[in-house]
Length: 236
Length: 236
DNA sequence: TTGATTAATTATACCGGTACAATTATAATG
DNA sequence: CATTATAATTGTACCGGTATAATTAATCAA
Picture (cartoon, rainbow over the protein chains, first blue to last red):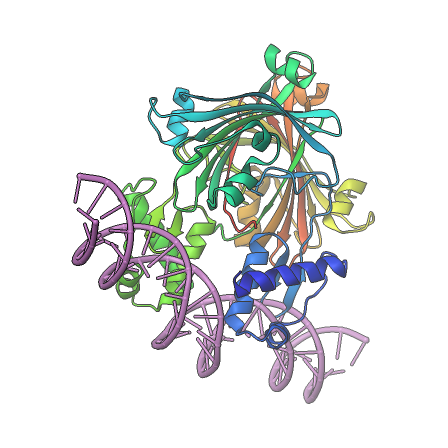
């Protein structure tokens, strides 16, 4: 692991262990430099990383401070990992409804940048939080990138398998949100009444080289799910 | 304006003007360095900025490529500016329902980190897109930071006034999303039926020094609004 | 005590360098 | 022709430096 990542982790751990709160000040750059025995630019890089993740914010002329959102139980829309991490205090389970190789829908083909003749793994599952339905997920994996999936993998963490098992590197993702009312089928899966509110989250995940490998449509139970985002400036 | 920001803008403009598409390759670092006559680290900084904004992605050993989401008419949840920019092809208008100085609600006081005795500007408005209701917004501004607002400012862009008029620098924001059904009052304002789906977006905006200056609750019309997010990796 | 001026602190911009890792192109091999 | 080894390309990590801008602390004046 790289130095600046290592250091970022240690700083984050330090914040965690000492239960630092929003606004608390971290040691100054100089101190961090000498403590970790690296150059200024490496520390800066660590801090930039933590800033992107929403862990700290830096104020020129003043210092480095802890940033921390106060609410618990929210799913991060930026985590790129599913919500395992956000909801680690809760019991998350999955029930696989369907798992097979098939041809993509037009929509899936378009979003995965493949042809209608190419093959995808289609996964449909319901996910539960504390025995309550959390969401209904339909997911398409480009088979030429993810050549094999089975029930066990799909019941556990697919992304973990992709990273650890296949050695692929997940890069950026595009996420689209829509609101609507539940269809009869969706309502049945989620145990809600027909026409209840739903949030549809469509995601396209890419490898670090820009190739899209997964397109998924997730319909959330409006009673069980709340989301959060941490945004930074750099937007003129 | 700083060099690396300037260069980032120029690169973005270049992409725009030449209508580069997702996956198109930009000139290599070396070329950009000599073209802009700056050091490698400055170009790198420009590109990191563009990467954060979701404009490009970089692949080690390969090159710098254009990243571009394909769908139009989506509101960016990360833009930190309201949606003026995303929806610039559409006609956005505002109707001010209420504007006054008052004491904050408990919720607002908590999110703005002020006491119940402090004063806030309370703004309530309905926003329209192409004559259709888009959202109902309730917003609280810390009066000790934003000491004056009037109807004209509130009808136009409040954030623009805060930045240009007051010279304040907007930093990061925390955003929370909830789903629910519209109350009778909300339904009336939005012209929808009671109990229809709603997305409630709560945002807390901070200055660059970490002070929260605005807390807002926006209820979106489920028929008119769709959102997007561009996420990057840096999430272990 | 207050307010303004100055100095010290602290993060950021920018330079220019070396080493390295991932990818892609080329050449060699069977 | 396909496969493998090798070389060239290209972005990233890391160093260490100078200068500068924003903030905060200290000093001085009224």
